[in-house]
Length: 119
Image (cartoon, rainbow, N blue to C red; front, side, top):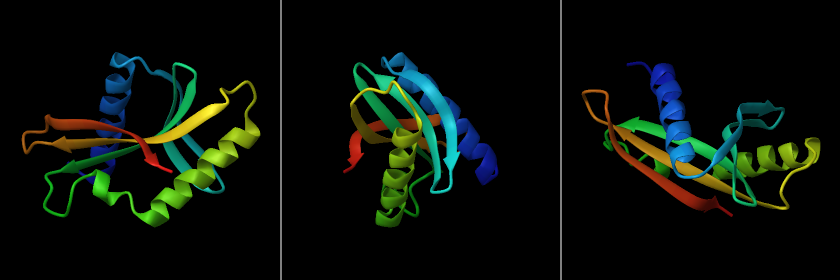
């Protein structure tokens, strides 16, 4: 499975996971000059920007470890751009990470939601 396919599957699994846990998906793959964010959802009265990281195994670290400080800065910039260009948004917002590990057979081995992963 190539990286693009793995990423697309991971995003689909993450959307399903979030919806099962009470999140309402507002938008996916939001792009702007500052970059891209995988999922924008709402959980109760909070707008949630979600970065999805999907990996096969943890040989080079876990999925959540791949969210580097530079990536965190980019996520904040994209979130700020979204907040400035959209109306009727909740006043509270945060950035979460959904980490997904996939088994060699192509099944989800682990899904972890890390709330407030980026401050």
